Length: 185
Image 1: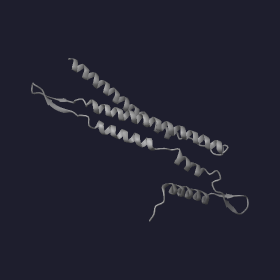
Image 2 (image 1 turned 180 degrees about the vertical axis):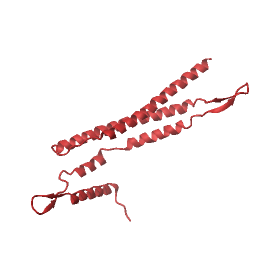
Image 3 (image 1 turned 90 degrees about the horizontal axis):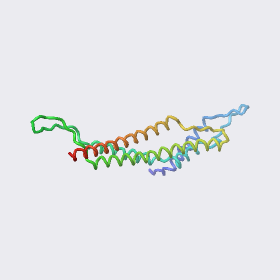
Image 4 (image 1 turned 90 degrees about the vertical axis):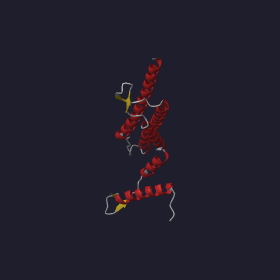
């Protein structure tokens, strides 16, 4: 059994959708016969071209991979453990993580925030431009809008990644300041 190339499969899916819409949209032209009008503005093919040529999800995958690496590095931070001091009393101690791990976390989160910002800005501009272009090219017959919820979720996720980046930066600065203060004494 041979498989068709991905582009050909997508084209077939679009063609099936166009045929489905064509079969379900009868138009009564005033007499007893009903004629089927295909997609006259070719909107289905325009949407397919937008999906294939404009939308690029590669940067989103990079953001997810970098944040996964960041969380894996964060899981290596030392936890609480009990130590016995010279008076034979036990107390709980949490040592600082190594500076290399904190720096690697910070770099992964910073790169993730940068790639995420580029990606969401690119998607926002492309979606807005495509919606406007579709309206202009069809002389106002088609109205396109960018989904507010989708854009809010995209910007919120990038904001949270930036918040992680800022938190790691503050943690790195505070750990280095505490180490400097303890080394002086």
